Length: 333
Image 1: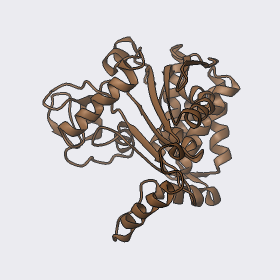
Image 2: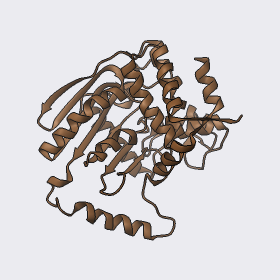
Image 3: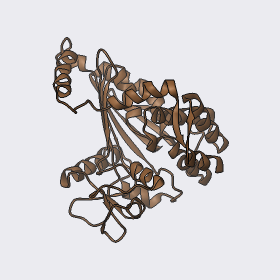
Image 4: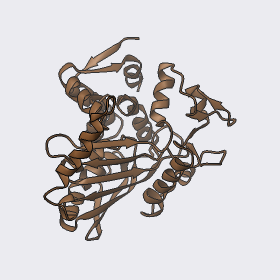
């Protein structure tokens, strides 16, 4: 089935109007549409319009309050808590961002725990604006059990992505966003939708047998990247985005989730640092560029995120190729 070419505005309008039809107010719908549009524009289709039916499912089931208003509470000079009050994460992130940036530029380092949110997006869409403000940034979030701990046999951790952003003087920030699993669950879902097989070593079926069938892996579990190393990072995310901030671990989120297919209620942890306040105010940016130059000297090597920025520039001119299958699903909503 052929793809449909859509402008960024058309993607945004479709996402926003669909969410408002199913119970979001304009502010919440617009915030979600913003990150869906950014994902599509940067070629990250697994977190674009493909996620819209999941957002709608949470609204239709009553799990999410589509009119929630986040509240900000300063727990300490450098700790800004955002409570989403059972709403979707994008508005909570948008409301809290300026407070995090201000705290980091005042104290040198600041943290933003987000609680009571439903997170379903790529983390780079959230970290990049913080690094565009001149800050080094880190974020992580958990999900529902999808990844087997090293040596175990049952899914316990979420895919538990981590994201890191580094500001640059003469261009967009360097941002990487990666799951703690071998492959993000969204990429497995995309492979299932398009009928592609997975590489060896991505996951297992419901019986615990290795499988390259994405449908079977979605019924079973994913493997952590690098064995025990990725498993340890997944555990770290559980502790930062759950234990540290008083939110749920992945297995707890699953226990109280209604299984409507959308994101569970959980937490996110974000950290921001002002590099000008760490002792090398005059040189940190140029020093980092030396490392980036050395990386790019090697044939085939590139900085994380470069492909996204190329896609963003190209798609802004030519439009985004959206799967007709996804558009049909959205129309059926």
